[in-house]
Length: 124
Image 1 (cartoon, rainbow, N blue to C red):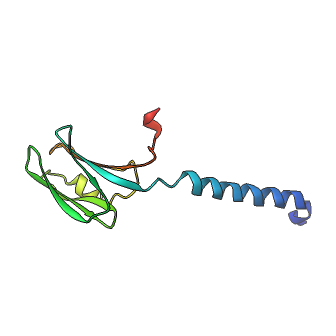
Image 2 (cartoon, one colour; image 1 turned 45 degrees about the vertical axis):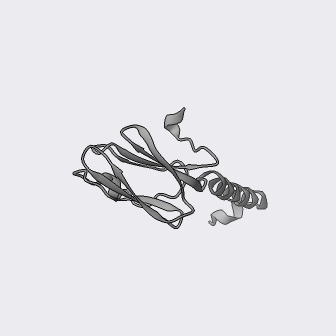
Image 3 (cartoon, rainbow, N blue to C red; image 1 turned 120 degrees about the vertical axis):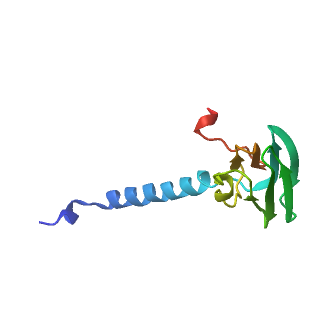
């Protein structure tokens, strides 16, 4: 006995439209906005706000030493840091607004900011 005989045209259309709706909602709300600038903080205070349009390297001094921040092709990363575990270096390239890399032992942070503010579950 085949179960396909119980599936009607309305069932197929419902599955197709529901699947299309999930794809559209995912593409609309899952992707973050592109970032316009990077905010670099040292010791909790804003060190510099830099546009992502120009490739450059920025040296930021913290309590442990100098951290190197690299901006390339509208992406940013912390290339080197004197912190012992190197979590912020392993964070890799950041490119969407709202992404953050933190070097807590050296008190350095890098945050990407865009035209639209991104929120996560912690913001509520």
